[in-house]
Amino acid sequence: MKNIKQSWAEPYKIKMVELLKMTTPAQRKKAMQEAGYNTFLLKSEDVYIDLLTDSGTSAMSDRQWAGMMMGDEAYAGSRNFYHLEAVVKEVYGYKYLIPTHQGRGAENILSKILIKKGDIIPGNMYFTTTRLHQELAGGKFEDIIIDEAHDPENEFPFKGNIDLNKLEKLIKKHGANKIPYVSMATSVNMAGGQPISIKNLKELRVLTKKHGIKVIHDMTRVAENAYFIQQKEKGYQNKTIKAIVKEICSLTDGATMSAKKDALVNIGGFLAVNDWDVFEEARNMVVVYEGLHTYGGLAGRDMEAMAIGIGESVSDDHIKARVGQVIYLGEKMMAYNVPIVKPIGGHGIFVDAKKFLPHIKQEQFPAQTLAAEIYLDAGVRTMERGVVSAGRKANGKNYFPKLELVRFTIPRRVYTQAHMDVIAESAARVYERRNTIKGMKMIYEPKYLRFFQAKFEKL
Ligand SMILES: *Cc1c(COP(=O)(O)O)cnc(C)c1O
Image 1 (cartoon, helix red, strand yellow):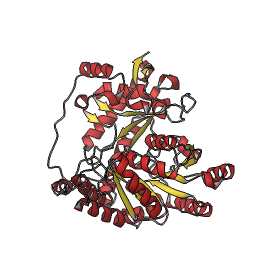
Image 2: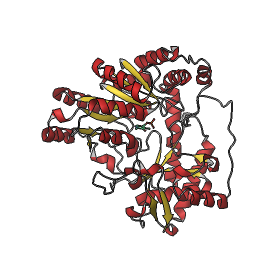
Image 3: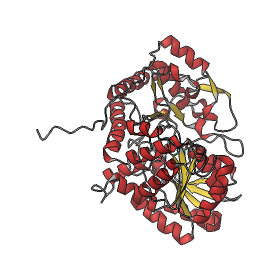
Image 4: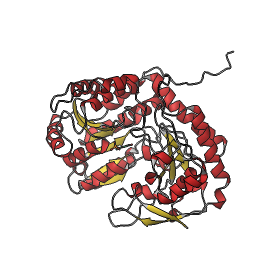
């Protein structure tokens, strides 16, 4: 008996289901053409398995839904705000909380407060909305993630780590007074959900302290990062996810949070800081952009669901099953030889479109093309994370990122193992006919965050 492995399984059971529409190939072809080959422009109704994003797509628990009924919808001083504030302090350890409607609301306020024109913001790989707010505030983002992160084949377990030499060079070149903070993300989204280690964070803390530079934590997927630390970092095997999450946060000065990911809600976010002066300014500014500082664009019920979701998100059983499902899908895809980013990250599988479609040049959008083909095959919706998402530089030229990926993002607590099988089989079928697939050209390009609304045509 001792050779039989113990599988992960869901630490919950299903008590309500949402019926899905099954589509024919002809229906999908029509839908994809109408959407300009951009999966963001598909109607959700036409999608069978929706892996566009893990943002706001989680299934809430019965406890969270019960919390929704306990909303205190007072304009000021809602009971739910004080509950959320207490949970953020208890679970993450940050002193002061400003709720916002979602993550980018917090990024906007924080960037406006901390960044002056001409400042440099080093970070472990860019994220779309984060970098845009840094740029709109007059800053310039500089990537200081380790080189391994740009290599989809490299199996280093902490590809979210910061290269401290790159940071030191930037400090030398520009001076510490030009660097208000380091923008540090846990579970680096654009690198494939890759974690940063505690060891690296501790070294970062020492270096930034020496130069009086803050560390601001994009903590959107901090619990998933903590899981990889527990599994892979020396000395952390017997620590709980909750303890690791708190330790990560303790090595930083403040955080922006999109609670639509880790924290298991459909809407919500916050800014949390330890510095009273920054808090004071943020509390003034949130009134302009989001709402009063005790609701920040959220209903009381949303804050209650978030407070409960945060508690559930740091449970060891939850996170083991959450990441376990992602790993199950990744291993299944590898068995079909589909090229994916390794090691498998926390929130989804990132397929390497450059390797999948080597005959399509980056100018012809291989990842965008592949996402469209995946949808056509079985109605699985994924998204591009490559040259379209990277956008244009200030001089108008395209960024050409090394990574050209299609993201299969897994919503939390939503799909079953049978769904994972269907997804992997669909990717494998498209891989079989990869040589027949042609690239695309862009026929409409919006000015900001173009990946959301751009349109394409088959070549
Ligand atoms: C989603 C996300 C954001 C932005 O949050 P929104 O809630 O979508 O505004 C910021 N950083 C990372 C890493 C994210 O994944």
